[in-house]
Length: 221
Image (cartoon, rainbow, N blue to C red):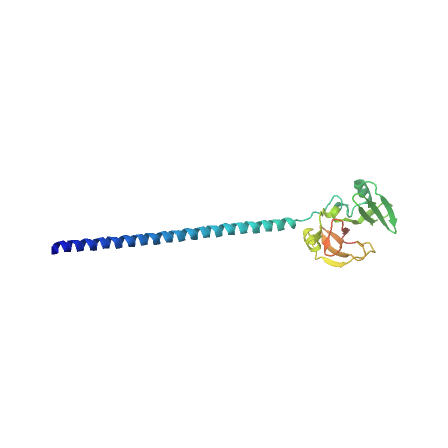
């Protein structure tokens, strides 16, 4: 009888031990599963953050590219402007054909063209004083659309950066008289050098427009 009770007791204890072991294993499995779930969540968060960072970087690059595009250099129209500064009367008429107006004022000669509107100011060629038509262009006046291909309004300081200015810009009030006169009374003028020429651009407020007047001059005028 005692032996039977002993065996039963041993059986109960063994069953209890097995039950406790099973519970512990289940708890360990749950803990492992929880750890894996947390790791998976962390990985997802990390991937999501990385994806977000990549999108942010891509957006920043797009903004930078857009900024670079907006700051592209404007090119001087050498055919209509640059190559006609310091050239002879004959060369200008040969290239531009006969002007709409050809008038003399004192010792200077002024050629006026339309479509596009341009004005050439010429002075006698000091190296060819006996030639009555021996004039050299010292200034060309036109608009920014013709000279620099400007298509839309632009802050004047941004414009100066876009035209490869090789000197510090000087901001003054417009002067309506004299050989370097450009613009209208009340306008402002920015002066700078670029491509070996001297430029003056008249503008209103703080922006230039395609119709803003520009004068291009030889630097020793």
